[in-house]
Image (cartoon, one colour):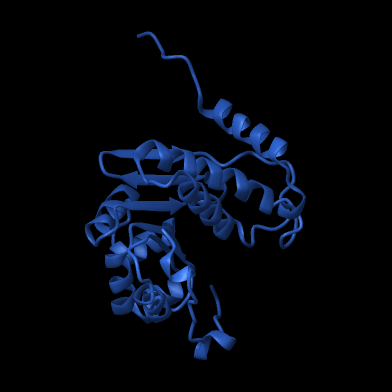
Amino acid sequence: TEDTQLGVFAEFDPKIPGPYNEVPFLFLGNIHPQLQLDVLDKMTKKPIVAADTMNFWITGTPDLLRQVIARVDLMLVNDAEAQMISGKTNLLDAADAIRAMGPKVVVIKKGSHGAMLFFEGGIFVVPAIPLRTAKDPTGAGDTFAGGMMGYLARQGNIEAETLKQAAVAGTVMASFTVEDFSLNRLGSVGKGEIAERMEQLRALSAFTPIQL
């Protein structure tokens, strides 16, 4: 990120009307950590919370960001952000360090190389879907987070197998986003295409056990 201008977010004070302050799943998008904390404080029940952030907040408001990290269940960051937050270059060490700050689950997004999921007792790696047409990566990370959180909310839990399936759902949805600009591709996606791409992703990483 070369330059960040907050615009309307500089004075933004989110209002959370009922029943939205009672949702069971909450995703705190990439915004000022103080606003993320404000939204958290306005929840009247204890939802399962995921959060995203970026280098601008990591370097500019580290103490506030640490407060956010300590209060969420899932933390989503890209590989460079994970290294910045943790001070570790190895991504496994970085994930361990971030999980030690509070989150049960850390998701490290690796762009065109997929994503890594770290949780109690396990690591899950989901590859990105190879695409012949990729017009614009803008919004892919947000789509991944939305697809993942949408699946978790639909299932109602963050158990290990559900987390793995959710990471696949997020990866599949993000693969559509990059095929066109803005929301153009997402607006035309049907369930059949989603199911087909999920099967494609499954086939990419499935193999018969090797006999040694």
